[in-house]
Image (cartoon, rainbow, N blue to C red; front, side):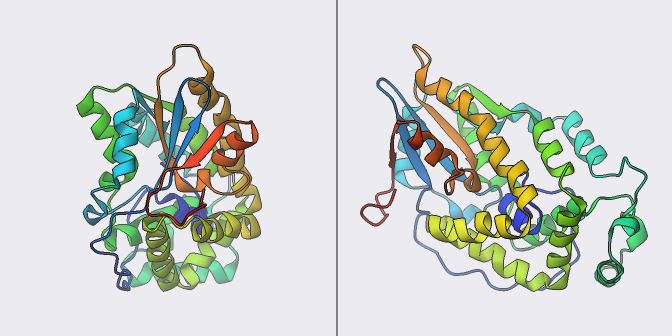
Length: 313
């Protein structure tokens, strides 16, 4: 689920509504090659946790997956996602997002947007037959996420093809239990509490050059397919730190920290079998990522990637 406003929204690729029609660039060619997995095995004395970095919207052409990913699934007795799967499809979850997307402090979109940003957004909406009045009650983060979702779907990306959904289906078919690292309330709060200044920055970046967002979407997808941790870290994590640092802390660092006890319990609790944990790729990147946090605690960590350069972990 969710994630991160323009840098944020591209990192997350989850949203609320459709976006205006935008001319799409051709996606980079990667036909014929299996995606290089963002997959790590974290071990203690008697069992292991597999950490798999997800792209939340994918295409049918992104399957099949690499053999080591399938092997990790087969070797795991249970799967864990950011949110327990049944929450994702509940009416209550949709209602929570709809409520969070509106103002509770007496403000409106016009009152939080600078005049130039408001005019730019109005022109973009007008070009697609919509109007500023129709989104007056929406907070900037919700508009940004909605537009990015529309761009992604126009480019052929689908939530039902996302890596999370793929493994939710496989777990159900195999009869493997599933769980979540957090509730949907945590994700909603993390987005809704982002400072207006950062929400406006991300929205303005998107509407100032929608074609750039299209290019970046394809670049991120290609980096995910290539298992390129350096590019993903630079284009998602580092850009968020530079431009929306409070959002980065709430959406990434705080949540990673909150997940650690549950992940460690999967390693240390007596009689615990191996577990496959599928989370957004951003959560595994850099010094704030779950991979390095577990490595720092002394667990054995190795990247499972036969297609990777020697020594890449």
